[in-house]
Each structure stands twice: as structure tokens, then as C-alpha cells.
Length: 358
Ligand code: PHE
Figure 1 (cartoon, helix red, strand yellow):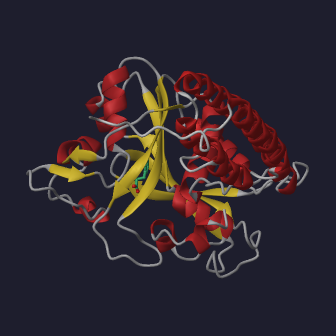
Figure 2 (cartoon, rainbow, N blue to C red):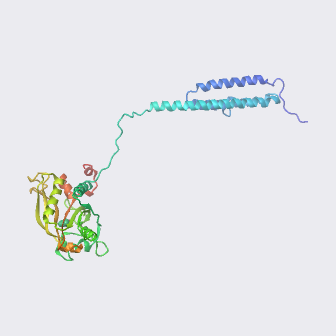
Figure 3 (spheres, rainbow, N blue to C red):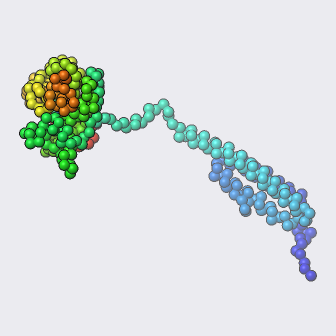
């Protein structure tokens, strides 16, 4: 015979007593829930009330002490209490979290009226700044920028500019050669004259040709193996030496100052005839003589001349009908003169102490 363990009368508990106890726990829990002042305390409350060993859960252990018919009723009641407490907990948690966030925001408030930290801004390299000054001035006079290649052929860099092989004039340019015979790095921007002429012929031309040039040279305070040039070219009918002088003077006045004196000195370039170098009155001593102008009062800023008939012909223009002038200047050199920079090596050595001054 099988006997089931049945609670004795003495052990039997009255349902109403247990409900009372459960209600007591419920009321008590609601009160302590209200008292929880932080999310930490709230978590503790949750564990002690609704956790596996929490006060409400413990009530389930007493179910066995009820008469069987009453058990489901009490179980349901426990679930109701659990659910009600869980809801109250969620509500309280939401409120507390909002409260804590608000307190945190008040404590860590930003003073939006303080000036912000300034972002570090880069700037243009002094060579680029000078290039842009030059573009602006020539642009105002109707000269467009014409881009020409840095890797050139011997033909364009020399021959078409009236500098044949073995001509002593080649000594004016020390050249970087590539492994491909006849392909070199351009030593000046003048080969761009031929490209522009061949593209536009027989139209009139007014362009500047800026870009990097390369020379195989000892690097010193006065010479670098790479540097910018800005070439200028005007081709058309009835262009004379007077146009060259007037245009270059207009440039110098805008670049170096309205009352800056200029002078032209005869010179030689194979691709211009006649040729002239242009000087401006020293910007540092205003002509009085100083270290920068080597006590001459003058600074050389560019080479120029009337386009040689052979070069015009190589560009496709009939020198009997067309004429033109050309010039070439070095922006780094101009920047050096303008700002009294005494060493060209600063331009490509990327020293911030230098670059940040511009
Ligand atoms: N190409 C010459 C140089 O590099 C400068 C120049 C350009 C001279 C145009 C006359 C005309 O020195």
C-alpha cells in the first residue's frame, strides 16, 4: 500500500492567512521599492524580492501546506503579485534612470558660451601661394593656364627650342635622363611653348605655363634639383618688344609694388631673339644696396625675349606673319626675394618652422 505524505491538520495553513502574508509582502515590497534611491538599490531590491530566493518566490514553498483545491488559487495569486511588482519595478527603474541621467547632465553641464577649441588648419606652401599670386596677375591680363608635361623628350626640351645636339648652349641646362634614350625630365617650362603653339596654331595665344622643372645640379643655398617655373607666351600679329616690356612691367608692379622700378638687360637664350633679363629694384633695401641684392640695388626676376623665328616655325606659325614674346620666371626665387629667404633648400625640406611662417 502506497501512502502519500499528507499534511497534518496542525501543519495545514489557512488560505486566508497565507494571502494575508502575501499581501503584506506585496505592500512592504512596494514601499521599499519607492525608497530605492539609485539603480543599484533597485537591482538589490529586484534580487531580494523577485529573484529565485526572493521573498515572493519563497511563498511558493508554502503552497504544499494548502489543501489541494486551494493550491491553484494561491499560485495564481503569487503570479499576480509577481507581475504587479515587476511592473512597478519597471516603472520605477525608468523614472530612476531618467532622474540619474538628468543629474549627470546637470553635473557635467557644458558651458556652450565658452569659445571652442580652434581646429588646426593647414595652409598653402609658400611656393603655391606665390604661384597663385602669379596666376591671378596674369589671369587679369588675359593669360590662361596651360598645363604641360614634366617628362619630356630631348626634341621638345631642346631641339625644337633651337638648341641642337652638341650646341654649347646645352651647357646652360644640366639634365636628368631616363633609361629610355631621348626621354628626360624637363629642365624648364619652355617646351610647353611648342605644345601650346602646335595645339592652337594658327590662333593667337596668350598663356602661362606653370609647373615643376628638374636640373641635375649640386644642391646649394642657391640651386635645387627641382623647382617651379612659370612660362609665359603671347603669339599673334604685330606683337612687339614694347608689348613685352609693358606687360612685364605691369606684372612687376602688381607683384612687387606700384612704384617698384624695373630694368631690362640684354641677354642670350637660344629660343628668343632679342633676349632680355628683367630686374626689379631690390624689395628689401629699395635700391640702396644690401646683402640680398649683393649691393647692386637690383634683383633679377625673369628671363624673356621675342620668340625666335625658328621656334615660331617649329610651333607652326609663319614668322613673316606672326610674332610673339615669351618669358620664364621662378616662383621660389620670387618668394625668396619678396620675403628675404636666403636658402632655396627650405622649400622642399618640409621643416614646419619654415612653412608655418607663411
Ligand atoms: N627657359 C628659360 C630658363 O629656364 C627662361 C626663359 C623662358 C627665357 C622664356 C626666355 C623666354 O632659363
